[in-house]
Length: 200
Image (cartoon, rainbow, N blue to C red):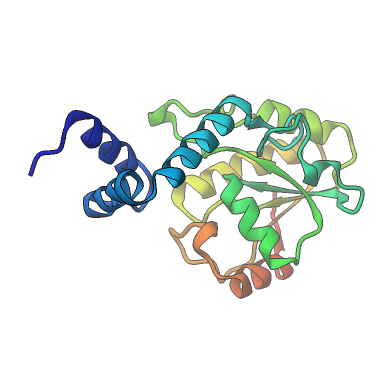
């Protein structure tokens, strides 16, 4: 069966979401159009507002509609610890464990020269300037245990060493090639509590 161009465009757009295959996209599109037009309108408004108003925190680079996100503004967070993660979803996964009380720096990716992603795209100049201020005494590398994540972590460790900042890495227990957002809370808590210093 062939759908009209507008319906097919909606299905194709939904297929662009992670984990959504053709059948799921088709079901979602038809549900929104046929059974729940109010949800479709609400989704449309939410997407438009988020696209227009959500940007990056000026301090940690996570997604927020405020200049400085709530975590960075909190007086209860430990200012001497800075945890480097690849994405906002990694930040959320760590926050859900409740084991870490420091601040974050979100790379929004990892080093990938083939994709044109270098230090500038990851905000590493901003990270270096932040480390140079002297407030951070421990930099915790929580990049994903993939080849790209480890390469990125090694690069950042060298950057921190130049600023005289101690660097630690999450302990073993994280699966090689895995991603933090899919790791269970108990494993992530263990990885944090058992983090190891990185030799520069």
